[in-house]
Length: 505
Image (cartoon, rainbow, N blue to C red; front, side, top):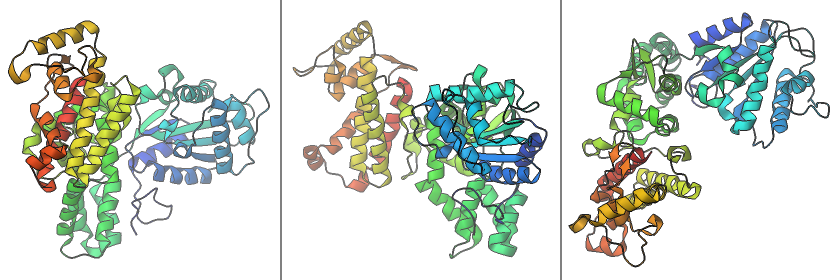
């Protein structure tokens, strides 16, 4: 059977060795440190467990530590204790304990976890970005870097012997650890690569036999050589179904566009949470490609997360599925909302997407309300989606206006009060002109239009406020619409919410 969850087991026929795995093995045999970067669900862990077995066969002692399994740690010694015990378990040595007073020294922990024998040691660390505490992370990787500086590979570490590291993950190298403390910039960098069409055909042969060539071509046209998506498509063909392979693959492709998946949500969430990546994706969706600047860290990270790949001097989408999703996304291209198909899967965001909001409580309100709106929309509960998106907009506007200087806020209020008709800001006796947290949405919007966001004057359409009327029972009764008929308004509200977030952040 195909493998779509977790690493592919050793010995499984549904595994194809790729160039990055061979390059990593060669560097390790040459006693070099290695950094493997690539998208999530792109085969890094599957490759590492095979590399571990092959390094052991080559005469190395090789430990594998997956930081994704790291429990919450509040102190640096707790991290070192957990890490050293994982190394010892992998090497089948006794659980280590260090002498009192050396609990914050990585070298001391490893000396206890790795009995000296003169045999070179390799430690493979997967998911290196999972040490969330910045201070602990800096200490950890800084001490690993110090081991490299001390000549750990050639002369060895006292009490351990020669030792080298390989790191794997999906992360911004320059943001994870400061350069002077980073072991990554003294390691050979290896990027994961997609499957070739021949490798897809070889895997397809395990599923559809003599129909492999046609099935592989169809799969490759839809999802390229992205390993997880290839396995997903082949797993679908492995099930009973009617119609030709091409028709079934096309139907599944359309379903993914319409409903999304955990893989797609995780990928696009990474892009949505980073304004610079979002801009690259928007540019590529509009023009077909984007600039490939080899010296630009944003370009490198866009490739690392997996949405795009290099093609000559440009960045292009890694496969048709990613491209079609990006072009249709109201969350990436809110200005195109009127041209969208009638139904589209929305992606929940993490708190990092709202990091421009200084008030932590309001930030939580905004992102949980947004994600509540996303969940409601995806389940067809469009009234509740409108509630969620409306709350998110109000929380963003309140926080943003509150963060303005008193002079700028007063100028915005004065400009809004000087307008006429429906554009004029009118504060009732419950509202204070100097306290945006007391304002109704209508005044948040009227004053907000007189202020400047990162792209100039804010664009806050009245239709967004009007949509809130669909969730007031009295007005719902007066202007009744069936739940299903509110889908366009809910989609538009999602797009407006993302556009406002973009202009505020």
